[in-house]
Length: 455
Image 1 (cartoon, one colour):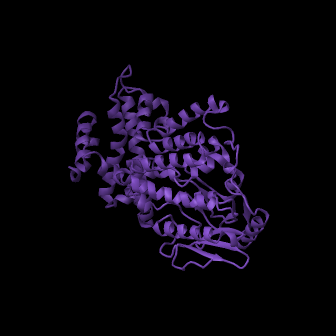
Image 2: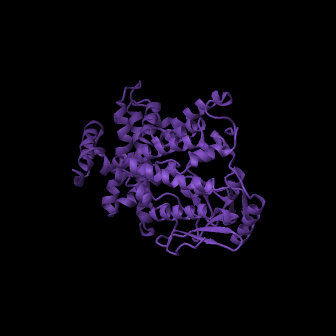
Image 3: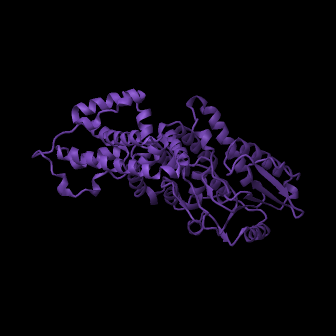
């Protein structure tokens, strides 16, 4: 095999013993992501592997950077557009096809994780037959896509379900959390931990020697999803309730629901069909406002400076105080606390807001609960903290990114993209926000009066 150019995002080298090493090393980026350079380079690398298959003994996939791969190209995903759905579907299916070609190459393929493998990076590793992680304290693995309003889209729901079973797969996917190498080993996401890259490479070579023609379990006749698929009687009594609880926790967010649907529906069909199901759900959620807001909030967090830390703390404090005060005010005006907390959860406040309040502070001024307009309650849980954050922003001349990050840190619903983005993207924009705030102010007091700059 001829070595690929050093300018490629995936550099291939083949040694005299027939071991091809694919090194992820995008020269244009400090981290490896599944951008267009990756797509083109990986496709060319797999083409070459297939061409030279008879002369190869195995493949090692690793990285030339401190991390393995950070996953999807968020800069591209933030521009997702329903009018380009066919193009986006084709691009995603192309990435997955190349991973599937790697998986069914007929040669042992080992991932050496010299650094963190997140999202699509982990999905690339899952397409390999064996995964070895270096014992590095900063190394993390996981699928954080749901936290960005998405779901694993490069085969993660398909392979994890077939490796771990439905419940274990969802417990990894839905929280959007990452784990260290030891936890990943316990979960069965990786197969081995090595002291360093040299030891990991030596273990990879040994595994290749011992496993000349590995086949994934789901490519063998008679394969069954561990623990049963979505229609298995063993899950019939537990899965609906478990999914309902997860739905309740997720609120109105589409990504967790889509991820659960992809896992459960995908478990009922073969891997190829499951991959198509995953693609459809991924492309759909990538077009939602929640995904755009969460991805924008991710970039906001990268832009904030340590110099604004004190000012951001002020924003966080007023956001926390104002939503709690608003919930208490609603109850003391006669609204049922359970209804107020349900409104807070519908607004996106995880777990509601009244759990921290002494029940003695929740005595209504009226003798009986009154019927409060639920839509107003939901908006009050958003407008009160958003306006409080805007006042601090104006007083301290903060940028929108700082306000968004600080408000989300205080619990402001992340799917809005933060308090500043919520004001700007409210239906009708800033004028629409000011108009709704004026209506709320007429009913509930001057704290809802929009700032002069918003009118």
